[in-house]
Amino acid sequence: MTPTDPPPTKAAEARAAAKAFVATLNPRPATTTIQDLLLLVSELVTNALRHAGALTGLAFGADAETLYVQVTDPSSDRPQQRIPDLSGGTGGFGWPLVLRLSKKTDIRDHPPRGKVILVAMAR
Image (cartoon, rainbow, N blue to C red; front, side):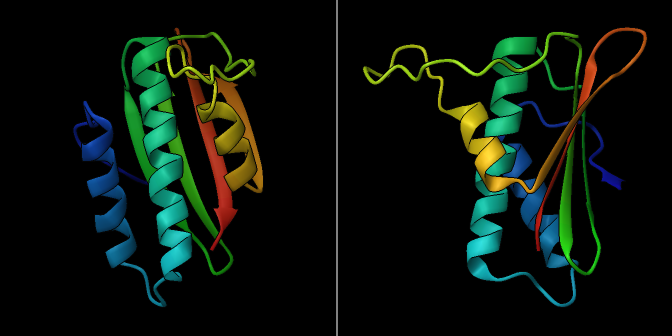
């Protein structure tokens, strides 16, 4: 995994970091895969900022078949599936989107406090 240093403070910075990471890959993923990666990163980072109060780490990795995104935040609370707010007030769309775009999602404790979310998506 290749960490960003320092961690982004906004989703736009996280997307820029994801684009920079993808630019190092050979072969480069398909355009639709890159778009999905950017959306996934936006949602993960936005959720960390909104629900955990901060993003304490962001890292990327890849192998021949998979792209990996790792997000670390200071909250031990796990993401919760909730009914989306269709009026646009409180969200509820991000976590289902993350689960849909990923082929595997793993959430682990990150002592002394916090969690790590590792998402794998098809390359």
